[in-house]
Length: 382
Image 1 (cartoon, helix red, strand yellow):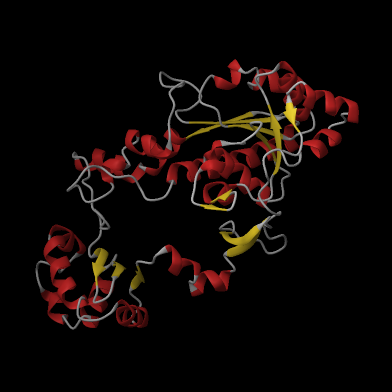
Image 2 (tube, rainbow, N blue to C red; image 1 turned 120 degrees about the horizontal axis):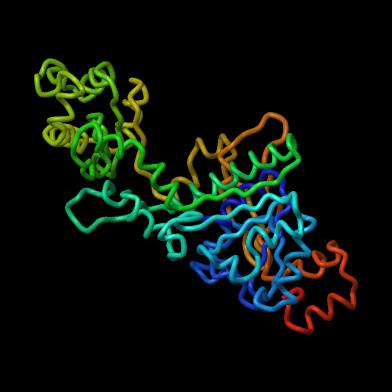
């Protein structure tokens, strides 16, 4: 997901993105369900507004075609495992020979060098390697990964940020450069607090479930009809919470007098809170906590998020057309601009849908295009 996420961000910000895919079925993500007709949720989530060309990059003609396309691009983004781009003749020296000023962005599992440079890796695998799985879950069962692809999506954000910084530098100096990012580096970065916890406390942090090692009460609690997440980060907030729950005597209880006390006695406090919270539905508590300025929210399902009032107020979802099928609601970029808001630039592409027009724009004649298709270097409008 990381490479498609990075180019989706750039596309939403106004870039024209040409997606290079395999001839035939296209990229692997197209096959990952569930599906609405031919459109897979995995692919639709990350490929809106891009144009697709299907190329066999193992053929010399296909490789030359990629190099020709690179001459008219500002950025070349590859998402191969370490060493693969060089094996295909599409590494930075090859691309830069075709376009000396290009930004070459490389996104990998483990980074641009080191003993694990060529290892294959996926989001969950790198969550394990970087310690994220060690601090996720309750610690009662086998380690679990985060429920969303935080390293794929996070690395996509970092690569997009790096590309934008490199483009700004090129405006100043006239020189293109390489931008590298990896799931491993993103994971280590996300672990910053936990790595410092180990250094300062002298022990590894334990999985906290929905709780926090530094604050209490902080976590998800059962109500009469669901769950609610509550965050308390100060004694003043705890005093308000105790009042709302009808337990003002907790304020003077030595077990809960300060945040440090509450962290030490978090299990006992959670049990007492749950006894009260189970007496009323979630909506009751949300209304009371909101009125008393206590950070909280219901633990929502994806269906509820699609209907969320705040998402509606922000216009956070946009409708994307899926040719031949009902449209889909997809999240916009989590950014707002006062002058030029990010736009969704159309539907996700079919495999190779824009091949002919991309080649024409690159200066190929009609006969050259047919020759490329005839030798299997590319597929037209597949």
